[in-house]
Amino acid sequence: MTTEERFERIEQDLHTASGLILRVSDRLDRAVRLSVGEARNERSKRRELDERVTQLAATVQAFIDSLPRGGNGHT
Image 1 (spheres, rainbow, N blue to C red):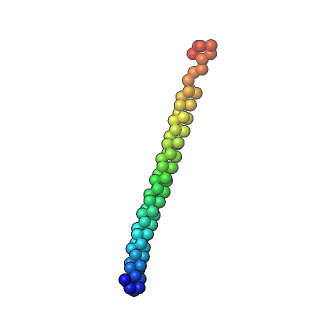
Image 2 (cartoon, rainbow, N blue to C red):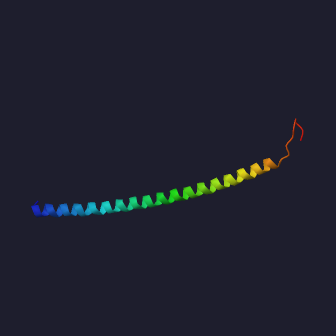
Image 3 (cartoon, rainbow, N blue to C red):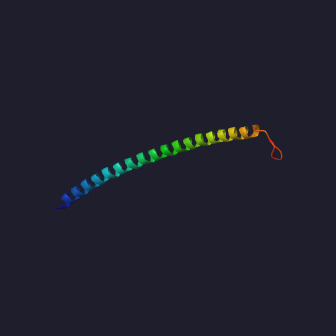
């Protein structure tokens, strides 16, 4: 194998490696975008759930407060 053939082979290998690196980079970018989107959706869902739990707690407390208070076992 001549020096020129070796350089051609090296250039081909570098070209192939560059293509693989770009594909891996694209996949990583996509994975990061998807994970960030999912994290945002989860935070939003948690916030909504927290608000619902807070509303439910207020409703339950209002119900408890509306019950007549008894003394010495009397209602």
